[in-house]
Length: 420
Ligand code: HAM
Image (cartoon, rainbow, N blue to C red; front, side, top):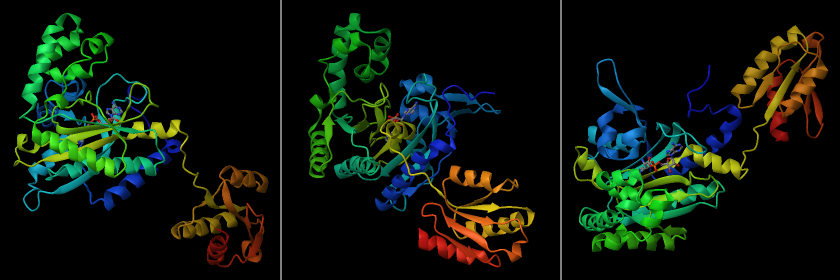
């Protein structure tokens, strides 16, 4: 039997980088005041369709949607923001304090064409801040992302930032864009012709060379920002500069979800081919209200966990192999029986210990200790266990001691502590 196309097993030999990223991210979230929230993987389809936008690629063609037995239309979440807003509104979290910061980590599902860095089940590390309109939180989220990547040793990542305006200034921009699209009708691909009517902004993101050429001088949101949006964007940029976060002002950045207002950003890499965005996010000041809540601004980002790990792999970022503290070589049944209890006691004391139960020879068990990179071995001989001292050896220094088999755990712990 084979796994579904676009889905992946993340095997134990690859998990260490995932754990490292998760550990660093959780530490930063804690220090920056984010609480964890866990959300369901299935939601009613409308949760995503209404927020992400009916005319987006995600909602039009990428969602895993199906009726359940009663006919309710359900969707495997393609992203976390919509569920986050649904939960914030449903539980009236704003009532006690509208300012809330959440993060969540988990799988998302999009039925895209699989390729390197693009999967049908992928993982996101998602963070959202509700209730703050100030541009400082926009800068703060980009700063946080930058800091996380720095701590993970990644330096080739660049923040691209743009402003997508607000309902005040966006109509003027859209009018100008539509005018251009009408005049270039004969040069656009079939998809862009369709987008012209359903979601014109997405034409600016088209990868077809002919469209890129036709739209190279297209108007952008930045040309039309109202004073409030312009001031907001200026403070974001000024703050980032002051914090020494490098960024590129990228007026072609439009993002693939409809809910954004004002600041939008992506962290991009050159090491993953076409799938250059390792993280993306932005402000969505209208969404809480659109989803039935009060008028509360919000902003967030999601890191593509799979892509981030892939970037680390291409840069040969590895995590030191966790070595085995102790391998017990138990020769004979009574040594195996005692050894079982010693190893469990040691595990409980935080000492990574393994024992082999197969009754193999000393030589083959020494080989296994090497294979497992054991830092120490304990040899319990074949003769009557009570009469024989045990040998505890440091495999690096070759130093060894004899210990009594009466109650060896305390001696082992002491020796390992001294030798670590
Ligand atoms: P997004 O740009 O659609 O934004 O996804 C965020 C990140 O998820 C992308 O930059 C990418 O790294 C990763 N990603 C997306 N699709 C795939 C895929 N098929 N395979 C592997 N990785 C993928 C959002 O999802 C928004 N909810 C972000 C956000 C949070 N905006 C505000 N708050």
